[in-house]
Image (cartoon, helix red, strand yellow):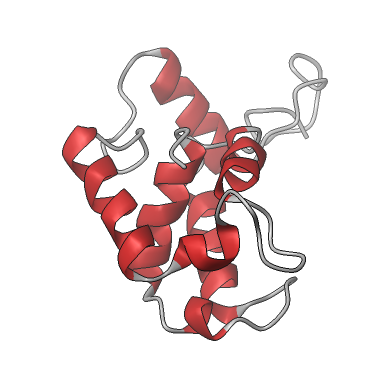
Length: 128
């Protein structure tokens, strides 16, 4: 299947989901929806304050607790993921709240999916 979602000649080497192909196309045209874009300064400040208020730096600070990655490491890791793909960010935020693929963390479970999404977008944009 190529980037258009159809089998056949053409862009077969570029395998993207339909949502990723649309996001990539919109971003290339400078038309990415605001919800997919990096947070503006006010939203970034809100996300940073949320991280402080929720105690994220207690485990994910400069000296991480246990096996928790630092906020900087999380930011670098998320920056390499398809940040323009809203389904990927939404999925990661939901997995964060449900603690899927990580140690059960009570603080993660106390986040709403919206709060987790804000933190994910902020980290993916380089916040830490």
